[in-house]
Amino acid sequence: MKFTTLMLTLSIFWQTVSAEEITLYTWDEYISEQVIDEFERLTNHKVTVFIYDDEIARDAILLSAQAQLYDLVLVDNNSVMQYQHKHIFHKLIDQNIAGRTNHNEKWNQACGDYAMPYAKGTIGIAYRKSIIKQGITSWQSVLEPAADIAKNTLMLANDMDTLAISLIAQGFDPFSINTAELKIAFDALKKQKSLIKGFEYAPSYTAEHTTSSEIVVAAIYSGDTEAMRRHTKQDDWTYTVPKEGTIFWVDCYLAPSIKPIKQATLAFLAYLNQPEVAKINAEELWISTTNDQALKLISPQYLADPELMTPDAIINRSHSYQTLTNQQIIQRNRIMATLNRK
Image (cartoon, rainbow, N blue to C red; front, top):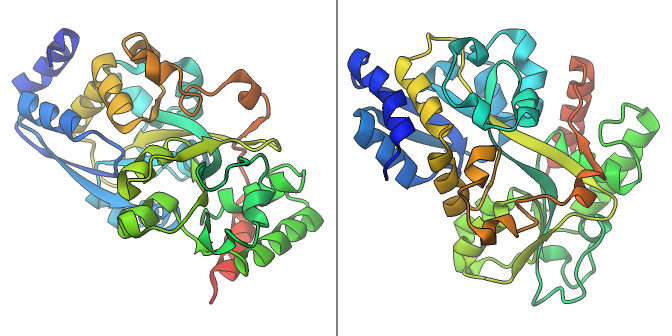
């Protein structure tokens, strides 16, 4: 790869920074190995990737002394909003990291002053179109699946998003604080639990079961279908946003402030912000980049994929995350804890 701008940016760090290790905590298959290899070659820094598949466990680490284990953590913008007042992140906007303006300003604002945007998308439903030939148009297909596919259906397991899906399906605001509405959504999830295979992140399930995977329907985040195709060798997975609407999310990188931020970490963020690098990440992993400059370099096939380039019709019926009080978050945590009991 020849990245002239990138080489100029990183040369500053080569002159002043000894080789360091950067520890990254992120979702599985969410950063290109080629991108990491090239950064290591250019800078002599070492990038070590640690994987999570549970946002609740991740957030518990962010709020504990274990946060010192990581230089960068990939989080959703909702978590950034919920926790930024706790002063547990470095304020990245003060670091003057090169390439931030390559991202659409909407996504910079979504991640705020403490984080750097990386990817974006929606919550929707993946299904195997060779089996669900009539397609899926409603969240009810996951909440109350047909008997012949119920035990082959997975639901997200997330304190915020799982309940939000149920609220949207009932016609309520996904961030409702109305007690009666929350009870209706909770009751729907209790009923769902008795019908389906379980509450689990579908790409993690398919990574574990590979070609023996039996699921045919799953609530997922956009972009996950590509990983599920690779894991299962099933090419018929497709993605849809139900008619009732969805939530629009942005994933961001942040640096825990429990320890000083490394110059190597800043160099890595500047590297990820480069359009050529963002293009490789986006096309190799088939994720929806927040980098507008990368879109000028990207393939027509990518630009034509509605799972990655969300149509206005879906954006118009999507919700953005809202900040909840600590008590409202605890209430949602308790709801999910109850659902997760055996």
